[in-house]
Image 1 (cartoon, rainbow, N blue to C red):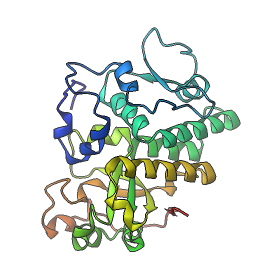
Image 2: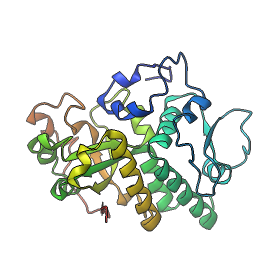
Image 3: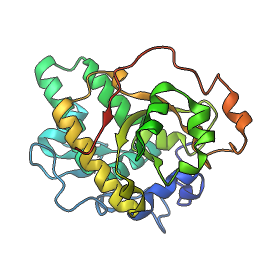
Image 4: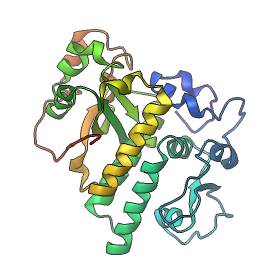
Length: 272
């Protein structure tokens, strides 16, 4: 999809229903301005430096233009924002996962201060999470183990009834949200795996997202994200109802649902 505004984009794919509690685009004839996007942020949201987060247009009026994107956020709370899908979804992720986004920014900035602007393995991983990440939350550890083991037919077909009841895929990467406007077989996200208790899936969506935000921010603060190998590949269109995937044959495509070919340093985040 080109960067043409469509206020009905949320009807294009079921994953956009995860945005319903921050719906700030109703009635917008063009890209929502920065002030509208800011209206769905938590009122006390600040960068780790203490500066309030705000969205400003990325144009000739942008202050501190000499600073790197992450530095500008950390030092002044300014998230430069363009009128396009990429930055629109980025703003919405600041609203849904504010603690996580602020922690990602803080870790980027700490690495920049320590190593300069060349990317470290951690900064590569943080960028992948921020752009292409999903959160796979499950109340049964064996479901998360199936993700780790790449046993996709078991996870998506044999355990089909568990989706939405014991396991869910939560979008956090804004570039992946942009791709979901025009999904295609082959789409792969990069997952953080979170074990939750059984009560999690009876919570309203907003409370689920707040809970995941707190868990992720705490995990990142304590352990960082050492490298992209800390994230697990995840074939998005395997999620029941997210594609025409209502037959077992769909999951036999090993070009998309690839078997595991190497070990990764992915760990399961827990509430304890």
